[in-house]
Amino acid sequence: MPNFVAGVTVPVAEITEDNEHLLRTGYTARKPTELPVLGRWFPKGRVPEVEAAYLDLILYSREQIRKENAATGIKTLDTDAPWGIISVKAQMEPYETPMQPITVMRNSMISEGGSGVDIDRDAYMRSVKYWESRATIA
Image 1 (tube, helix red, strand yellow):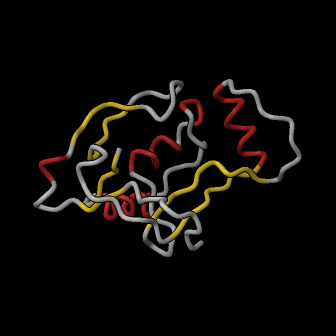
Image 2 (cartoon, one colour):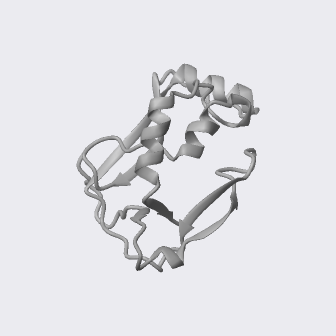
Image 3 (cartoon, one colour):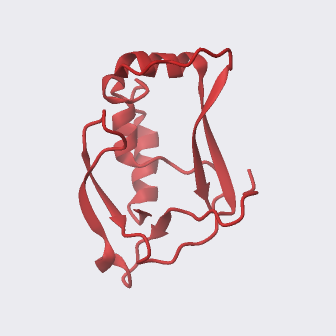
């Protein structure tokens, strides 16, 4: 959907010859219950950030949220809502951008905070193609 929130920036930048020396690597976890994995990023403030043109809302069904919460020991809220917003991605593209390859892998491991979905090789390779020339800004 078009971005309707002023000031929301895209947390991703293209890797160029001019900025690749700014890249950092390290082990990070998305939340305390997950295992840290190797990642790369640009430190916030070191590369230009642009205002998002689009917001991509990531929804999970109530059943999927309950399944993941049970696998990770998180108490599920008592709600009849059929869907839950689990993420809002700020981006420039008018289509769903691929998640990072490590996220595809993590998502296959429900006991480690993923959704328990098998890895789709073609989707994984599209993710690699998209992310090999980009890095997050954090």
